[in-house]
Image 1 (cartoon, rainbow, N blue to C red):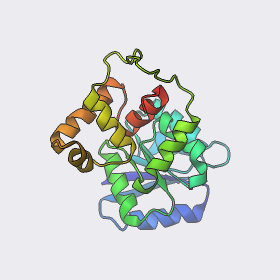
Image 2 (cartoon, rainbow, N blue to C red):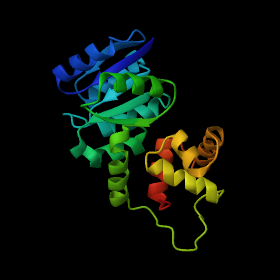
Image 3 (cartoon, rainbow, N blue to C red):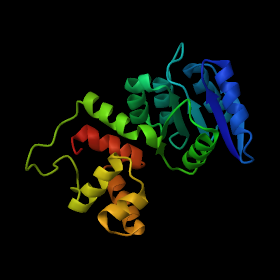
Image 4 (cartoon, helix red, strand yellow):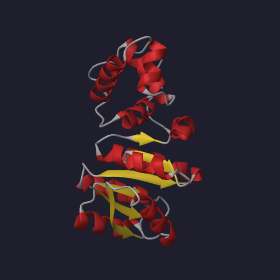
Length: 219
């Protein structure tokens, strides 16, 4: 049974998500929080597998709450649920350690699948907005940019040409199957390249890999 904490300042939103989630036999909501400060307390008390986190809340927003929860409980999965005009906060939330980003109009099937993915240690951004999210993050990012001909000096081990190909396709929101078809390689080979990217960029998952690559100017 996957245990879930719901964090949102609107009670009706929390109740709605609880109703949708508990229609699934393997999902169980164990608590609610109305702001980030309450979320910190509930996360420590209840030890949920996954937290569904709103961004804009009184007392403490979802970004700060995500950052503090991940610092104390690195294995806890956090999914940010927001509206598209919250982008500037969402990118900071992902950098703080959230492993998912979805709009609040997500379907019940999508949110259940996302919770299962994050509970299993994976990461997921809603496919319909992946490109917009990455485009906006690129605009906001102020990290160092790679100059023409410059070998990646900030990486202990530079990315190979094929790893860069895979990275660019990941940034476009392509699935492993789509990457394999585009590059004429097997899905197993794609998975190996993704694992190498995660290791070389020193991040936890593919979402973090894309964000780190954006910040470093690789994309």
